[in-house]
Length: 39
Image 1 (tube, rainbow, N blue to C red):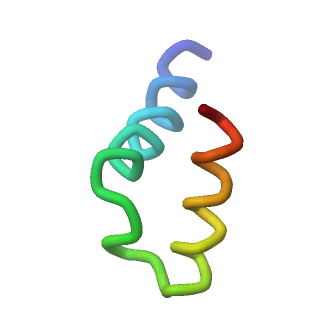
Image 2: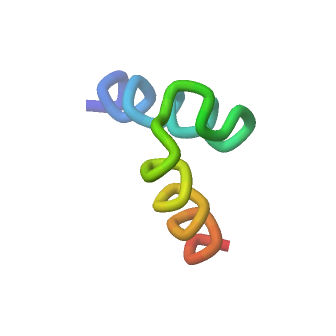
């Protein structure tokens, strides 16, 4: 279970440091809103 969690969270951390590199503009806007809510 721990390995699965780490596999899920690593990409999320990468997206936080490199936002929207592989996302369309709509997803980028949604991601920015999501990040703001998390902080």
